[in-house]
Length: 485
Image (cartoon, rainbow, N blue to C red; front, side, top):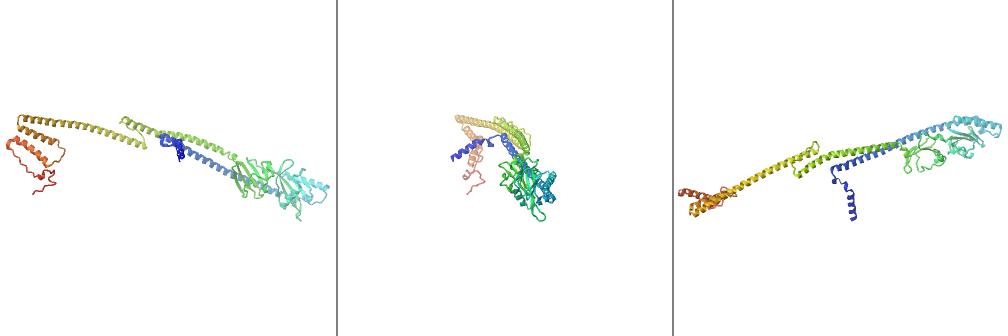
């Protein structure tokens, strides 16, 4: 638990600077806006690059498949035409004589026949530029060819291969002639048309280079039966078992694969006529070489817009924070008792309402301060008047007290009585702290007033007051009238 707390504390120390509440508004905007802009542009750029790569790959796949399909169609057309052209040898009389003749191999007739057949084969090659060599082999192991070069394999190998076709063309694995040329042997068993007896073998050596396409930057491989290489850009692979994509499933008519380990993109197309598989492989680096320009432009545009976004964020942050800084500066002037502050902000945003509210508040404060000053002035004036009012009664009390003592000194009782009663009346009128008094208090005040009047008028004034004792303590006789009995 203690270790977890330490980890959390270290995390806050490292990333505490990113807490927005610890920064000013301008810095908050500069921390958030560019970050959001960078994230948005990065996401869009990555998506654009990957989407472009996907579209480019799909477009390339369709393009390669169409090219392979066209190559397969062209090759099938040539092979079909060669298949038809080989019937020339089956129908030719001299070829039949060569396969059916039982004469001696060194006889003049046999020698002339071979010369004629060689001329026939030479003429055939002149009209078929994709064939390197034509060989006729009869059952007596006699050979007629347009050249005297030896065959790459024994005659029995060619006989066994031809038997598998039973009169149809049979394609063998690629071979290399003694002169170094790569060829594809094509066999056809020649049967007697009347007895269907095997008379010999027609052997064509097709040039392997007819499968090559100079428009391809990658590698084109043609696979025959059992996965042997019929044609390849790499001569070392020709005629051997194809091992580069052993685990690849070529069961479908067409398809594509990506070898992420070796960085290779592969397309294949299977011929409907020969069942050959046309493979085209290209490094993904070369495949996406054209898209590098797109990626570079996306990166340049992303960087450009990021810089523009940061500059705009700086301008926006400054425009937002500048009025706030001005408002804060004006507000701080209040701390120096400068109450004449009045915000002048021209706009239609929330800061306008804030400035108006602040100005209204300052006007109200100034009004309250002026009112408070006026109240303080009035209070001081009233205090002075109250002090003056207190001075006058005391002066009168002292004066009456002086008259009272003069009367006592001269033994004039009327003067003493009248000054005492007058002082009591004044004290009762001035110092009364309550608005409602009892009947007894008012009765005493009335007696003092009547006493003064009796002294004034001598014995000519008589006043009678009849008040029940029950009413002396009353303050409101109408609210609670006494009960007289």
